[in-house]
Length: 586
Image 1 (cartoon, one colour):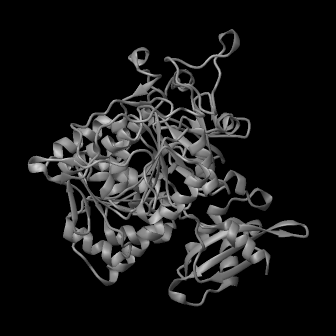
Image 2: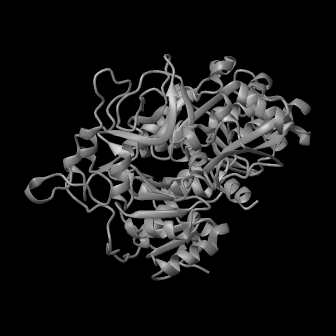
């Protein structure tokens, strides 16, 4: 069993001498920094010899980012980084209040009203504040200090989002480790950020043991009653978090490697503002299926910051979701991936439910299938909102409910989110006119600070305040963005996958499709797979002819197979690497 190092907690006695579970606020050991992500420094960028501004450990200083990220003439958004006039007075280097005050205000406003619901467990705003106070006191007694780093192996219970608030209350960076991130990547983050605490969901104890064996930290706790029911130490405050990285998470690994992504507090505040602009004013009553991933958790945090209620439903089956929407009077549903949205819509065709309280259904995270999206919109009504974003750039575009009534827009991901600039550029970084394909670049206050411990990759992705997404797309004259493929996944002959996939899935016998490249003696050849609707027969020759007629002979897949289901990455995208491996082997 993992335990916190140092003296065991002594019982604290209440009235009448009854023992209460808690921690005596004894002197705590001082955690010695071994290797800092960014050195503690006075406000302003780090400087080298001669006073030249230098980047440290792959993440630029806050003022350097601010200077680089100012929006130019005609910019849609505000500055990419905001100046903090109190920076010179901040203790032990730059800190920022960021998301913390909004969360504190939301929980206090809720008071005795429920804010977190999971099954029979219902926690009020007062309950959550008490849990935060207790856990923060216990961790502080163990040696966790403001400006430190707390890594958390996230779970699917209410305890995990509360842990995020605990880190803010302690003034610490928070490393959100969702399930599936390789140990070596997590260890690299913990070492680079000099983690002083590791929290973990009880279901991830074995993973915690492996990490602690390789990288011991002064404090380690399970997210259970022992942490949250310790004696509360007083009112919760939000002292501010390190300005370089208040939140650290991991990319989905679509490119084959999980990158360690750091966000500053200004970016976190911008994420909240963008969510409220897109999804309507709070409070929300949000239903989310927790998958121990970054984005579902952030929806919970944004809901709490608005004084709303987050309903966590671990059972993602469509029937269960429909029952929960009706029972809990849900106003906002985070449906997850497009395939999850389609499953819900198709279930409701056979088993109608009362969804009259719903105001919005949010989906995204993978390419949508226009034909299935149109069918879902027809069943669910004007409720659908699709988002496109990246781990590094936050929210980039939104396809609003009214856009779902226009079939020509269902192949797009919508227009830029308020405060976000988008450009489509050629390989030299020059802007391209409407209709031409190129890489999507973005600039906004939501942008990451950089990749942890990877200055070369940070420099390649972030240029003059702009972020390269690695996605290829084109933009129409109205600003609608149409994604075509990943830049590194270009098909033979310079073709793009999404237009071909849209043609294939437009056939009534096809439920889903993926197009990819296979090795060949003459180089690479175009291949694809389709999933038949309801297990029915699929005319592959007819599909080839359909593609040939719509896009030309060069877009026709040389090989085409029918499979039962698309393999998917942990992020929900079609796993084209797995498909290529499977079919290259015959």
